[in-house]
Image 1: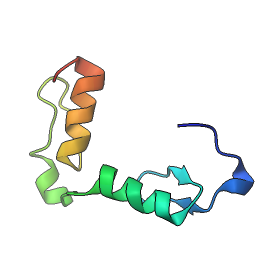
Image 2: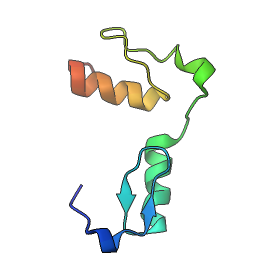
Image 3: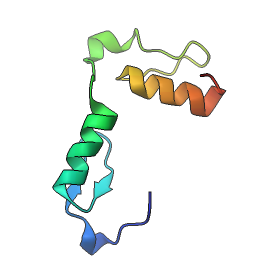
Image 4: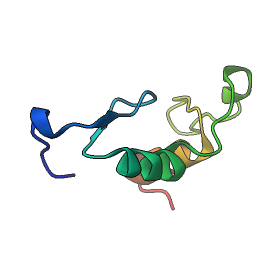
Length: 72
């Protein structure tokens, strides 16, 4: 993601803190990155089998496994 000047910030994701230049970009990010989120009670099922780190969505777990462990 390219560097965003502070005075260009229009929207901040309340889930992860990423910043965007428009509400439209934030909305697209939320659909791509945070759709399908599960509640904390279900999160224990979304645990990395290699390092046991826990995630709030299946997408976050998949991304972690690709980045951290080369899975997938």
